[in-house]
Amino acid sequence: MTPIVLALIGTGAIAVLLVLIVVGRVHPFLALLLVATAVALLTGTPVAHLAEAVQGGLGRTIGHIAIIVALGAMIGRMVDLSGGAQAVARALVRRAGAAHVPLAIVIAAFGVGIPVFFEVGVIMLMPLVYGMARQTGRVPAVFAVPMAVTMLTVHALLPPHPGAVAVGGALGVGAGRVLMLGLPLAAFSVALTYVLSRPVMARPLGCAPEIRAIVDEAGEAAGPEQGSPADARLIAAVHARPVHPGEIALVIGLPVVLMIAGTLASDMMAAGIARSVIAFAGIPYVALGIDVVLCAWLLGLRRGMALSTVSDVLAAALPSTAGIILITGAGGAFAQVLVQSGVGDALGGMLSSAGLPVLALCFVMTMILRVAQGPTTVALMATAGIVGPLVARLHLDQTHLALLALAMGAGGMALSHVNDAGFWIVTRMAGLGVGEGLSSWTVMTGIAALTAFAGTALMWAVL
Image: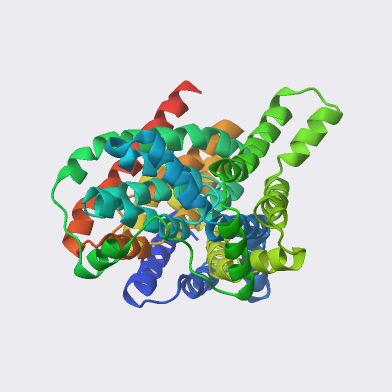
């Protein structure tokens, strides 16, 4: 097939994918598999090789991210049920003072957002938001929207979140390097977004009556809801012996330090036992596995809980990861089919002829797909499949490949609106109407995306 025909098939596939997800409300996992199969057939993939093409891409992607996502979810669940997020946030609020409560909550959200998924993190910190709204007399959105934007920034840019891990795997760059560059980038983006968005948040915002009722009842004692008997025993244990913010800081920081140290050791240390040990501990799944053991001891066993109870709490985190892992895997299958069929190469060539630098191309393409269809992970995986062949021809080093992954992450958080589940979670829990959500949350996600891309472009020019 000619490159023009392949490019048309690829463009049509993306359009069909968007229609299925946005208009037809087809689950992204099913939509991605259907479109990947159709592209493989239309581009002449033999039926005998069809399963290998689709299942191979799905299997490789899941093999790369499943263990990281699962271990990250276990850590997040222990932090959630222990009330650790609220402990960290309350400590920061006490230190910052009443005048800087929104900033303190943003700092807490940055730390808490590293090990937990976006939606979980928002829900974890909402009791504190309601308590602060009650104490200060301000509407919850003043605290909730900057907090949620911070969570989204961390979610889109940093491992162990599935989109960042999957794109890093697709581009062939390690999670440790993405973390090493992504942490200062995320901090830069969050700080600049907080400053630039102050006029947006200074405008009068409302609060829905049902949220106002919750705020009026909110208090400092708000905590996680009890679920299973194991959850209840953990909550009782931490109520009897409350979690210290330093314990949560250790849990959040340890895997980050291990992964970055592993990357630096591989790059800078001479071969030897010390380098091997540090590099081993820095393997993402090893670093997270060590942190799970630390969580189990620090937040459970050390407080008198039985090992079986702690194990039940950790295991309960796994079902919620199934959908995320499968969607990401299907995105990997779609990306693999685009690459294997030559569609990605044709699309990449067509896009590169538009004159956009590769960094801007990654950002713009991911942003377009994100705005059109909603889920960040789907947008990231589709973009990786389209630009992958182009990037492979450039023979970039690991640092610049990591920056491309971060540029995609920046585009993947842009302009969250009504087709994004995150939009409804934030606006409903903050008590905002659709119009207010678009003028505050959507605008701020756009600002965050632009600041993250600006930081990535600056790093690209310097490094």
